[in-house]
Image (cartoon, rainbow, N blue to C red; front, side, top):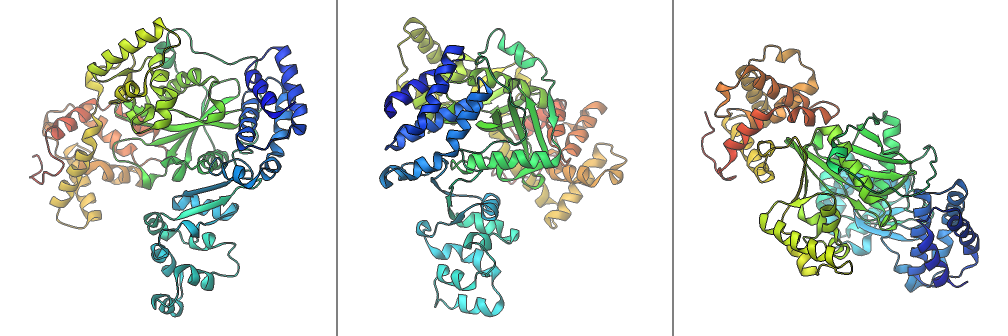
Length: 560
């Protein structure tokens, strides 16, 4: 059997769960070692199908056979002609190479455990790394470095300690240089080889194997399903959380992708949401010092049988949450629509979000892949609608054409027009007063800057001064007895919420809701902040009113 025939048949059978289909799948897998492949496209297609069979296995035997073939993937890649092999760069497949500019935290983890190095041939200017190299040098060596007699790479070769396994390991050895590193945008080259962190082998360890009898589809009242609490949500212990984070981080880095929560994860806040049939959603909080002010910025990775199949973020803000889903290529055409509904259910349970917002990039604005895949219709079919009335009308016309002609496909120009604004899905308890415009976030930051500037002292002292004054205004009597985390959260947000124009008219419960909200920002898990946001309606509405119509460049006197 030639490669084209074998691969076409395997692709047609991989999501079929009848006994007849599975017997043929097993026969194809047993025959595959003898199938010769000379094109990268053939190897990539086989790799995709094997990952799919591992993620959604119909039997223990099929999964075992697929895993065995994945173990030999590095040899298949090595056997390709060089020109074909190079086409696999940045796919994350065993035997390929990933080249990407990686943030310090990710680069450091690769330097410690993977065959990764500075991609010197793609460094735009060696001197860009000088701010990273110089602090690592002894004074006598720094004098020579500053002389200009040596190039940066040349001097790194001279000065690198004998026990450093690579330039990358040495240059990421000092965590105090993280900001300089990120400013330099250092390119990294990662030789994946047969690493357990490559896409081919990356899997969350020690999960029970769940076999399938089919793929699930969304049915019935989807809003009612989203509003039904998901009971099986667990805060993972730190050791287990670290395993999940490492798997999630590798899944993105190998594919040249990034999410802030995977770069700066909070190992004390990883929520594991069981979506049944072997599918788990890991929602990962961000480390406290990298938190946003008013939003709860988290990332997630979706796993099927421990295999990463998709990723994204969910960012609660008041009673809404900005989100979206990115399914990795091998798992397109699986049960993504069903899982997306269950993920929204998990987000609603975790954060109390009543509106879900999809920004235009997710379904086409500046995103060629999203236009090509028709991502707009994925969200539309599940109940999301354009925020703009004009775009809603265009979408309704297109939906009628699709319903009348199943072969009809929206033109790229139409899809780009549909991606000219946000998509919304509102749950039954959402109303117009529950919305805080994202466009106000920069103005909130400017408001904080004005309040701190008015304190006329150092930033740290100003934060304490503003926080103390706000605590007194809100009737707080036990501020000194709060935990350090609670005081840190209160100080972080006090400059935004202080001196709101109508605060004197608030009820005691409104003031208590604001105090509770600000205290929660510094807690080890940020989920509490998101949940308390939904109960602090008066504070959010007052803040929005104080910001509306105020330029972010306005340096006027703070509201009294």
